[in-house]
Image (tube, rainbow over all chains, first blue to last red):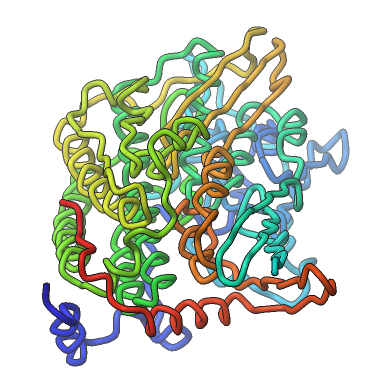
Length: 147
Length: 400
C-alpha cells in the first residue's frame, strides 16, 4: 500500500483549465433537442385541445373567444410548465406541429404572472386530403429540426 | 448514561423523509428508532386524478436522481395493462437511458461516499466525471434530470448515428475514469481504512430484513431484478451481478464501482446491437380493468409499482414502493453498535439522497431532557477528528 496515491492526479490538475464555465459571462450551448419553453404557431393550431388534455401540469388553457368567429385563446402558464414537451408530442397537426419548444433556459423572473404567454387566433381548418391525416405517433418530433 | 438523538424528520430530497431517534451510550449507538410519514406529498392519490399519459411525468417526479426508474417501472406496468408491445428499438433506447442513469447515480453516490469519508477531492473528481454522462443524457433526451424519455408504447426520441458515436466516446472516458477510481480505492489506505468495517450487515440479517439493491449485494446476496426477473431486454444482454462479501460500507462502494463497469458493458451492447425500426407504437387512451405489479432494478434497488385500472383513462390505484424504503430496516441494523460519527456514512451508504441536505442533529440528554443541536456539518467534522486520532486500520484491504 502506498500513501497519497491521489496526489499525482491533484498536481496534474493544477495546470489544467477549470472544468466549470464562467456562467453569466460565458454560456454553454444547449443540445439540439433541448426542451425550453413551449410556444404556439397560431396559424397552424386546429384547437383540438389535445395538448390541454395531456399536459401533466395543467399549464395550457384553451378557451373559445366567440362562437361565430371560431376565435380561440390559448394561455400557457410558464410558471406551472414542467418542460416535458408532452404538448408537442400530443399535437396532431401534420407535418408541422402547431406546438413547439424553443431553446430558452433563463426563465427566472420576479413575478410569476409575467411568465404567462397567450395567443388569440382563428382556428386553422385541417386540409381534407383523400387519405385522412393520421394522428401523429408519440415519437414524431416534426417541428424541431433533426440536426 | 444513555442519550437519545433524534435525526430529521425534514429531508427534502427523499420521497419518505424520516426521523431517526437513536439511543446512544457515549459514542456508541445502542438502538435506533425510525419514524416515517413526514412531508407526505399525496402523489399516489394525485395519480388517480390524472390520465395515463400525465402520470408518466408525475411518477417521474417521485425522485430526482432515479427519475427514469420510476417512469420506466410505471410505463412497463401500464403497457402490460394496455396489452401493447413496444418496438425493439424503443426498448433498447429505454434501457440504454436506464443504464446511463445508473451510471450517473452511482458516480454521484461515489462522490457522496468520498465526501462523507472526508475524501473531498475524490468527491469533486467523480462529480466532474459525472457531468460527462449528464451531458449525454441531456443530448439524448433534452434535459439533464427529468429525461421524460418514456411514453406509453416506447420512447419519445430516437438516436441518430452522431449521437450513438458521442455516447460511445463518452463511455470510453467514463470507463477509463472508473478504472482509475477502482485503483484509487484499492490503493488509498485512508479511504479503505475509513470504510472498512463500518455499518456491518450480515448476510442472514440482510435476507431477514429484506434489504435490496447494492446494500443487499454488498452482503453477498445475488439479488438483481435484471437477472432474476428480466424485463424486456435484459435477458438478451450479457452482464454479471456484482456482489461483495465484506458486508460493510467498503463492500457497498466496491459493488457500485463494479456495477458501473457492468453498466458500461450493457450500454455498449445496446448501442452496438440497436435494431432498426420504430421507437414507439400508439397507445390507447384507456386500459381494461386489470391489475399489474411492475418490478424494476433502480440504481438503489428494487422498485415496485402496483397499478390497477378500471377501464377508464385514469388508474384506480397506483402504489409505489421505492428501494430506499426497503432498506430502512437494514439501516437500523447497520447503525446498531456503530458510532455517532458513522451515522452520515452509514446513512449515505444506502444512498437515500442525503447528499443534497445540510441537516441538524439534536442530542437529547435522556435524564435532563436537555437538547443540543448539532449541525450536520459539525457531525462530519466530529467524524473527521475522530478518525484522524484513531489508528489506521492496516489490515483493511480492498476486496477484489
